Length: 520
Image (cartoon, rainbow, N blue to C red; front, side, top):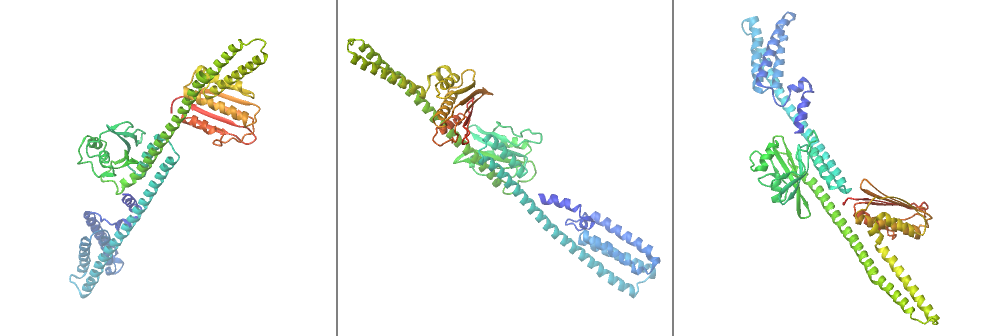
């Protein structure tokens, strides 16, 4: 395809000789006109030059037309031109002598083989020109093919880079469609997902105005012999060289779009047929051989991206279940401690205090001993209360995140500067995650960082909760080093948020968390 275009352009810039020695001869009518023009011009020139010397020396001009016609047209027209030129040549002799002399016969015998030799040389020149042009076309086609393959490999690398970076599937699908369209130079590319009711357009190529040729969400029937239906039935790459004779509602719609041929490949995620990647061409004739194999390369990349996305979704869901299960277990422990052991200890203390009232006043040692036991029971109850609050603080459930953070700051052993801008209640999973982020940061600052001051900022802006906890301690904190930060990272990321720790040695630690209020 590319060789023909460049060949046609090349002839127009290679001069008159190259145009004459073209592989395809000009029309015979043009050749006859050129031959007649040369013979007339040659005759006129010979008449004009007769007075300058012997006209025998100028009659060789008749060979010029023979040579030109031999190079530009077929052998038959060249031979005809040769004999007509010979008759004109003979006319000049008869004009001077009325009869042919021996010298005239010799001149004719010389002219005729020279003219025929010119025919042979012209034909050989044409054959050499055809061979040279064929070689040039092959080289042009090879270069065009190499460039096309290089472009397609570059397009594959760009899509593969997106897949490797873990870019969202919603971005990879349009990118694959665009790269495939540009790489194969086709007008229509569509990525489909199969479902119980047919196929659904996920992404489609856009025209010059930026409008989708086939809009996302459009339903495609699996009836007929279309590429979409065939891939669904046979789970393999297929092609249709012409839609002219295919039947079915989908095929009729394809013809209404002006598509002449199509090819496609399945998107297989594991052993499951997820969808298909299909290209169509409005040009007459079939798509190049091997097109469906190139489409398969892109389809495999999309399949990898889908598998990665599904794995990531499963991992996120698994982490969410683990975090939720942990929170539920803490709530159960908190209730059990509050309603069970804590209440039992308080009840024992009250009973012991009531029993102490029955002891005689002069039993000082017994009263003192019972007072110590009551005080111990009160201490145990307080410890159980603090333990249950650490598992799942009741103030968080009752009053919300802002009140819970203020409670953490009051109980902290070092001063805490609060900057809170949280209006109203937030979804429970977000409040729980934010609470533990602040609680863990305060605990680490007191126990490990040797900080003298902590600053806590919490605000809600653009439906995103932003938390920043910084201290002036020794720094050096690393996520995953056993400090409990890895658990906080899981909590935040399972909610679709981001968690970051900056802790240069000797400067202090700044912990940042952003959590969207909407579910991921």
